[in-house]
Length: 229
Image (cartoon, rainbow, N blue to C red; front, side, top):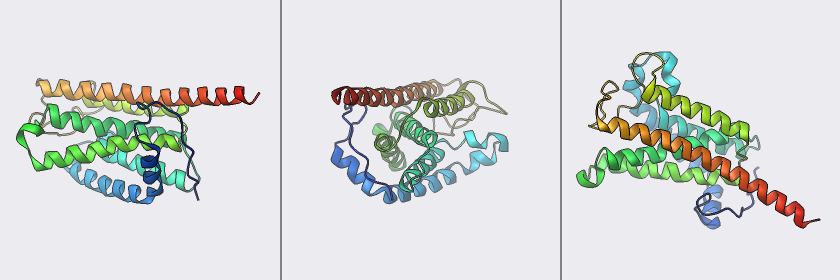
C-alpha cells in the first residue's frame, strides 16, 4: 500500500494547490482513477469515427485526450501498488496538462463557448480544465527524471508534428474539433493556427514545468544535506 507522499516547498506556479487539496485528491486516488477511466471510455467513443478513417499504424497518435487520461490511470495505479514508473508519470503529467488546457483554449478561442453558451462545449471545457489541473498532483509521488521527461517530450512533440505539420500517413491527424476546425483537410483557416500554436506552446510549458520541479527538488535535497553537516 502506498504511503502518503510528503509535501514539498515548491512555488505556486509548480504546485498551485494547497497541501490539503493535494492530500484529499491522493486519498481519493481510486475515485480519481474511476473518473479518468470513465473519461477514457468517453474519449475513445468520441474518436471512433476518426479512428475508423485513419490507418491502423497512426492510431496511437489520434485519440489525444483519452490516451492522456489513460496515462493518468496508469500513473496513479503504479504509485498505489508500489510499482512507480517515472516515464509513465511524466507522460501523465505532460499529457494531461497539455491536452486538458488545449481543449480549454479551443473552446474559448475557436468554438466561442462564452458567446454561444453551447452546453456540450461547456462540458468539454469544464471536464478538460479538471484534466489539466489534476496533472499538478502527480509531482507529489513522482520523480520527473530527465530520461522520463525526455520520453514525454519526444512523444508529445511527435504528436504535434503529425497533427499539424508533417502527417505520418495520409492527412493531418489532429482531432475533428469544432465547427471552425471540422475536418483534418482544411488548414487554411486561422483556427488551425490557433490550435497548432496552443498544442506546441503547451508541450513546451509542460516540459518546462516538469524539469523545473526536478530542479527545485534537487536544490531542496542539496540544501537539506548541507544543513545536516
